[in-house]
Image (cartoon, rainbow, N blue to C red; front, side):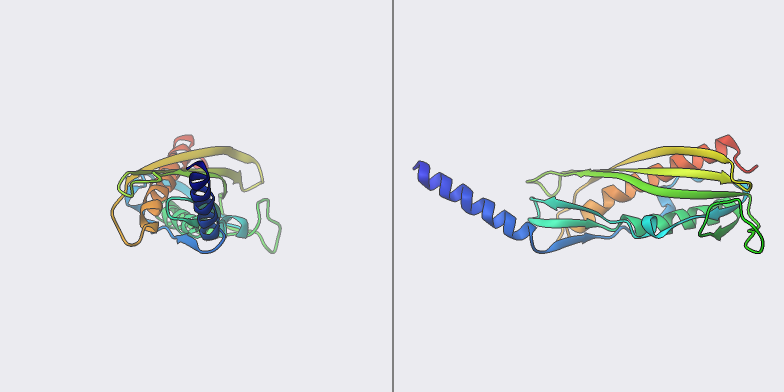
Length: 202
């Protein structure tokens, strides 16, 4: 009896390892400003957004026993679009830049502040049994805001957490994405609120 149980557990472990070493579940976020707390906020500044490749191309990888696959969260692409859309709505003007100030001629940019975000942490949690249980995610952005002369105005971390009720779906990646989307928008709301409250660039 004992040998039978051990063989079953061994076979199950091999099966899980087989799946985890093979296919990956790609999780793409449908970034939306609907849940970002913008309201009537306005940043009275000409903003330079420094969205480098490390940020824009960021992926988070993990193993998912519930789905018997690897996970590949495409956080960078979604974050880039979310930041760009939010600041275009909030600011006097937005320019994409590829370096931090101060700028020298002839590359001097007509900007007031530069905002450079980075993804420094991500985690997720889900039920290993029930697809309709809650999915949770947490993301941490590090944001550095620099003045036109190169002075540091903000240099801190912002964490957002999201919880989404799972749905019985043939596309389980959407359940994982929903929680991550909520986490991203919560963090971005905190970032925007802090910049507006400090009147950076005003």
